[in-house]
Amino acid sequence: MIKKIISSLLVFVMIVVSTGVLNPLTAMAASITSFSDTVSDLTAAASANHTIVFTSPSGVASGGIITLTFDNSTSINASLTFTDIDVLDDGGQVTLAAAPSGATAGVVRTSATVITYTNGTTVIAGGSVITFKIGTNATNQSTGVFNIANGSAGTTTLAVAGSFGDTGTLAMPIITNSVVTVSATVSPTI
Image (cartoon, rainbow, N blue to C red; front, side):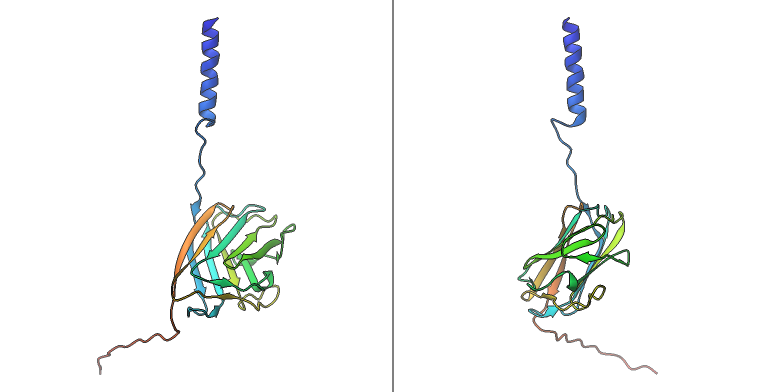
């Protein structure tokens, strides 16, 4: 009788340990790769277009969320809507609206520093290149009107996160003025 109890207890303990109930497994986000943001003007307080490109190792599931978060007093125009943004999946345009519905994805300005993309039912495969065009460079469903105002001179960051499983942070210089002086001495040759 005692052997049966001990045997049952051991089986129970093995099941609990193997399923991770006592020590739950932790999921780690993958780092996005090939992350860039081409900004039309890096001058402090300038209004600028952004072309943000990154590769998502995990992809984006149906209903998955991507957040783009800026810092250093960067300000996303309060009037910015999905009509000022294009999203591309491996170069193909994603249909956008203010909220997701079926295959249409939703994209909104959720605060002065955050843009939130919610995927529709079309899954973005792992390894896909995702592009966000924000501002007047967005031309898919309509031409964008509003864009993002740069913060103060210094370094600003753009963080990509959300429920889609990948994360990444990119630093960009914001300069005092748009004048960059370059000088060089070139030796004459014959």
